[in-house]
Length: 159
Image 1 (cartoon, rainbow, N blue to C red):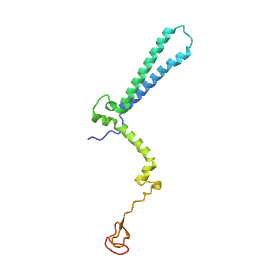
Image 2 (cartoon, rainbow, N blue to C red; image 1 turned 180 degrees about the horizontal axis):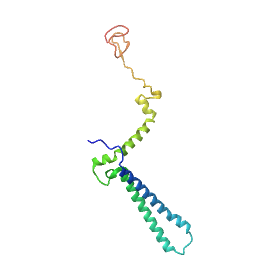
Image 3 (tube, helix red, strand yellow; image 1 turned 135 degrees about the horizontal axis):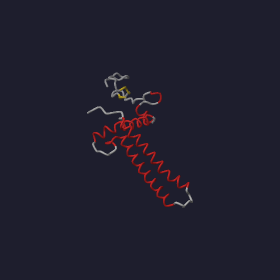
């Protein structure tokens, strides 16, 4: 298996930023409809032409936002990762930088959870959690001894 590409190509970065620009222009075009409507409130002298202009800008703005979002998705996840082409192996390679970023974010969040530190033994001050001690009871005198002892510490009998 080939080494995964950990960096986004310049083409994917360019596609992402072009998609973002298209989306912003579409949002501004769509938003201009509301600004124009507020400025012409109560003026019905050229209502039909104004309504057509506003409707056309709204539709074009919405279309640009949709197209920009698709281009951004292709740029961030690649052609295969965005679901346009279906090839699992290429999809895995396209999505690898994105999923690595997600894994890093999850790892950062989990490192802040104190319960996990207690379970892994990396508690406050990075001191290991106390380990469980197993004791063995002597059959002769019933004294408790460490599990590694071969003879009883009290009576000397073999454990």
